Amino acid sequence: MLMAEERARVVEYCLRMAAAGLAVGTSGNVSERRGEFVAITPTGVDYARLTPEQVCIVDLGGRPVVEGPAPSSELPMHLAVYRETEAGAVVHTHPPMGTALSTVVDELPGIHYLVMRLGGPVRVAPYARYGSAELAEEAARAMAGRSAVLLRNHGATTHGRTLAEAYDRAELLEWLCGLYHRARLLGDPTILSDAELAEAARALQTYGRPG
Image (cartoon, rainbow, N blue to C red):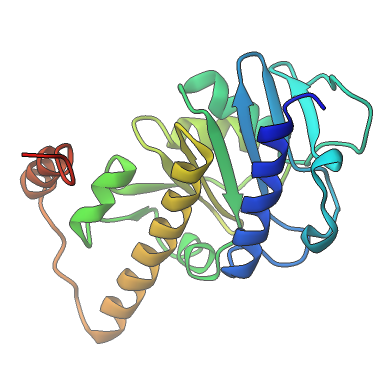
């Protein structure tokens, strides 16, 4: 089976995404790239019944490589991210806190230094219909220099070198959105300065590595 390992991982992370509450029903989608091919979730398939054989394989132009179900409606956004970055995987979620926040702010600010794991404060892309070329373009533009974006009145997208990294960033983004929400309920939160965030970014580059 073409891209058997990637297809299996797509199923694994779809199940994790659903279990974590980052997607409801058949919403959200996951993809992993290998060379000129992309393994991506099919459209409208319940994750509990999803099998590796149902995961779609397309080329970077979006053309199907193997017969099977139609790919996710958000294929244009995944392909746009692959065109504009060196990503090896993309995760698109409908997280409750991130989606709620996307309706009231233009950016998730530096509420915590771990926002630098995403490249910095996370921008909110303007609203465009799901699955549209416009949404794909707006998401890729807002993600410039970042590995995450919030989509106005819609959800969130993250990318990474691996599917594990892209998914971890999706979970981190939702945690940061929840943190900002709770801080706003308590009062006017302190936001880290550009200098403080830059210092944290430098420290994070060596975090966890042998001294």
